[in-house]
Image 1 (cartoon, rainbow, N blue to C red):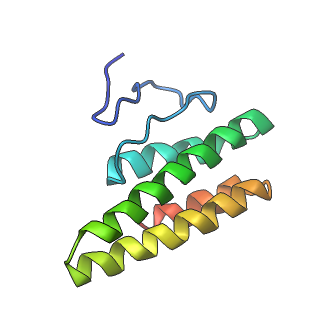
Image 2: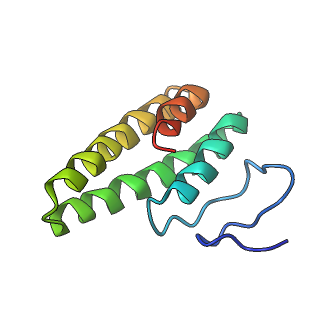
Length: 106
């Protein structure tokens, strides 16, 4: 196995028990989370996905306070808001809907 840029291991089968080390909100990181959302069914897996989405929300929130670029701020604000919505969907047991929502950023 090799490591992706965000530290996640690449494997042929997506393992919902894997926790993504969220260090950024790149398309690569979001893609990994979307893939995991699509296969997460157990309560434990949903807790992991919520934590990953919390990390995306926190990182985007920090970014919003640091960038003066208005256009980039609008894009990141949309991701920030949708990460919160995706988190809520996962909490309601609707991870696939959360995956669809996040996949719009890929």
